[in-house]
Length: 292
Ligand SMILES: N/C(=N\O)NCCC[NH3+]
Ligand SMILES: [Mn+2]
Ligand SMILES: [Mn+2]
Ligand SMILES: [Mn+2]
Image (cartoon, rainbow, N blue to C red; front, side, top):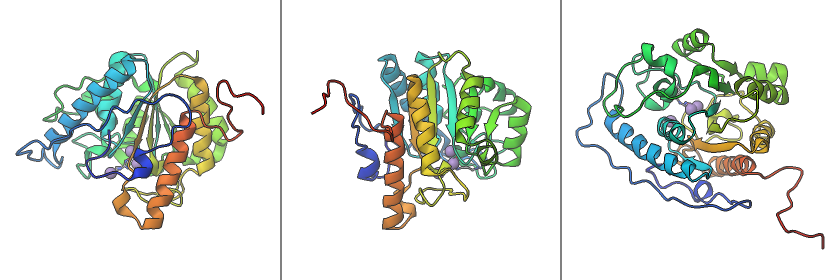
């Protein structure tokens, strides 16, 4: 699903040098008429309807045993992608790669922007802290807090940190990435959420997890982010499991940078996504290739 704005070719036309791709096309995301704010929450019914369509599409794709690549738009799209993915893979685990926790509820959010709240809609243990929101009646929490891990956090609101502590969610902020190194972080993260190495992986990649030097064209850039090398490593490790089942790639906003910044962001995003789909820095040999 692309955002409503005309996405840049770079992100839409990700060069899938490996594997067979089915383009399920753009979802027709119509705004809901008279979509009044709910407290500070803007456009709840339109965002809710869009996510319902995302959920139906992701459920269909993952039921086909294909990897669903969801191109945002902002991170609110993960409400639909995780819910839809859970319909076909109820035992999924979620790896959330982001500068932000996106764990606010409609009650705790300072901004009212739903892209800062997606996880509060899908985590079962968040039910008692949150509230019903018009447009989201269709969402049932489908993820246990123990099946989620954060990587790359460095801009976490107080309420989000309190929820992470309360729920005991596994969390590797940039502090832990610096302390342990990305190889160690990936080993610990996957060992904790999927010790037997059998569960389908939902990877939700917010490009602002990258340092703004590599992804300036995004809504909420935060200094001190992942290098491209660290992002490649995450992607290669996830691809290496063979259990990637859904990949969200969100928060690329071409309108928020210079031409150069836009291109830098698209190049980084396309490259990281290619590594999630099997591109390896050591090189690749396609099936059937024979030495010349
Ligand atoms: N990129 C964003 N989430 O990942 N923006 C919203 C965060 C506000 N705490
Ligand atoms: Mn996010
Ligand atoms: Mn973010
Ligand atoms: Mn945003």
